[in-house]
Length: 56
Image 1 (cartoon, rainbow, N blue to C red):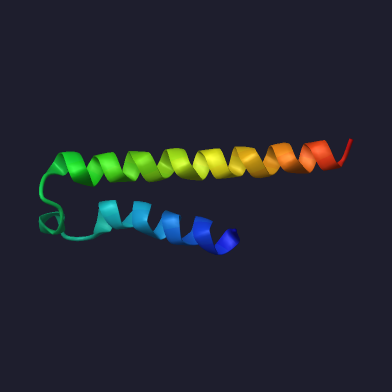
Image 2: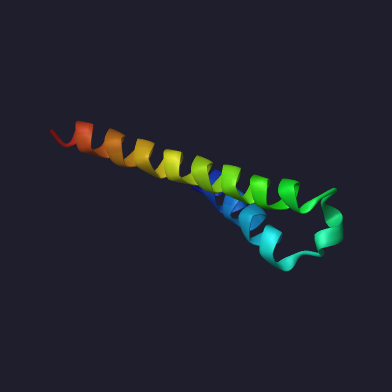
């Protein structure tokens, strides 16, 4: 799971430091970064929920 989060964080960071010509349009560049950010947030919230349920 940690590997997946690191991989997604690298892809989010790529939207900021890679050449903009790698994307067909800025919409795809920023849309992908936003979508991946939502995925990371969902994964973190899911892990936090699982941990809190197990600790009860």
